[in-house]
Each structure stands twice: as C-alpha cells, then as structure tokens.
Image 1 (cartoon, one colour):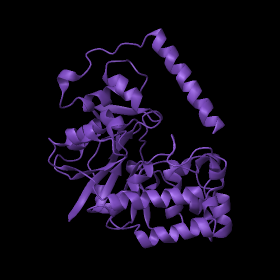
Image 2 (tube, helix red, strand yellow; image 1 turned 30 degrees about the horizontal axis):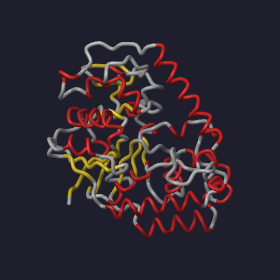
Image 3 (cartoon, helix red, strand yellow; image 1 turned 180 degrees about the vertical axis):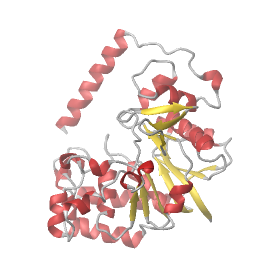
Length: 339
C-alpha cells in the first residue's frame, strides 16, 4: 500500500489538459510521486498510451468503487425535486461522471491530493500532506467567499435545522477542483447514511435547485455537518498561504514558467483553467489563437516533452469558424435553458 499519491480524473476528451497536468506535476511537485488516473468513462485509449512511458502513473481499476459512486449519485439526484422537471436522464449530456473523482477515497493512497485535469501544478505538496496529519480535508479555494446566491448549498435552510449560524457554515464551503484527504474517509457505510439522510429525510433540499447535478454541491453537503476537520489555505492565518488559483479570475506573475500570486509574489499550488472547454485547448494545441488566459504557460507544459510539436505561431480562426462556433454555442445555451 502506498502512503501518498495524486489522483486526477480524465479521459481522451481532455487529453491535452491531462498531459499538461502530468508534466507540471513532474516538474513542480515531484518526478517520482505516484499518480493514479480515475477514468471519467471508458474512452481512455490515448490516456493509456500516454502513461506507458510514465513509470509512476497508473489507471484506477476498481470498477466496484466506480459503480458504487455512480449508483450513489444517481439515486441521490433522482430524489431531488429538479429531477422530476428535467427531460434528461442520468447520465445526461451535462450530467456525466465528474463525481467519479470521489473514488479517490477508495483508492490505494493513504493520503492523497486530487487535481482536476484542467489544472497545472505549480508547487510541491509537502505542506498539504503535512496538514493532513492534523485535518481530514485540505482545500485551497475561495468558494466560501462567493455571494450567497452563487453558493450551491442553501445556508439559510441548513442553518434552520442545525446548530450552525451562517458564518460558521460559510467557512465550511469549498470547491472540489483541488483537495487533499485520506483513504476511506467516505466508506460504504457513510454513503448509505448520506443516502438515507438525503432521500428519506429530504436533506437533498439543502442543495440549491440550480446546482442539483453538481458534484461540488454534493461534496459540500457531505462535509458541512462539522464531523470532518477541514483546512482551507484561503482562510489561513498566514497571509502567505492565501493566494488565487483561477486562470480567468486572478492575476499571476510568471517566473521561469512557475506562476506566483501577483500581490506579494506568493507561490500558488495550482492554476485552474475553469470555464474553458476541452475543445478550446484542443484548438489551441493545433495552433489556433484561442482566448485563454495563461495560454503560453499551458502550451509550455503541454509540449514540455514534445517541443517539436508545439505550435510555432498561433493564428486567429477565420470568420467562418467563429460564426459557426458562435451559433453552436447559442444553440447549446438554448437547449440548456429549455431542459
């Protein structure tokens, strides 16, 4: 059994981000740390080919654990009031298998850190693993600072049935794009307890309707009752530990292809390319000048081991391509609104 390791969730659709993340971990975390890839679905041929040359990277192969999380999530969301309104059945076109990241709790690492595949690792994890000696969960995000209307948990409802006031609950809110934790924190017994509370006691209504399919919302529900000790670097008493992490929201300084918080040049743990699609990165890697913040840093890590394939020059897409993508995006938005 391995003591520590890293997990990510991937398939061939996010291949470019996946490769960039692996390369950034090798350079900025450790070339030897064990990494386990949780399959988003069965489309992982490119992923398997990529890791053949990486001795420290394996595929998560516990199909029972994946099925257990699939069953849990599907049963829970089917009990949400919104499920009756939706014409889509799980897994639908936007309700896929993101929740499979939680299979990390059933994995081989006693202590682990999970990165979303659309991330770049920027800093070693020594401090995170040290924090896990004292905490059940470690986070590094600003989800707790969002206005109430943008939170996926209804704090008023939770406060009304628990002994926590809103401020106490808010500090427990977190994202699920990057977290550290322990093996078996959520075992089968715990999942059955969650399912009973969510369905039979209708605690599923703690989750805001507009986030009823969100893995982050479910993760927040699972940790908001105070039974788990949590540390969030963005709430740290040490100001040096409070940094940004989002590519499209925060400003960073590049020093030798490692990003630092612009204010104070504080080192960050990872850069998260949230809100950008895998298609955006695929086109960028083919030489199209896509509007992605910190795209040069992404291309550096994506082609770190294949510099000969890195685009020499980025070219703007033609008018026809722009028009087609705009129309396609608008149609998809209408479909989401209708459903």
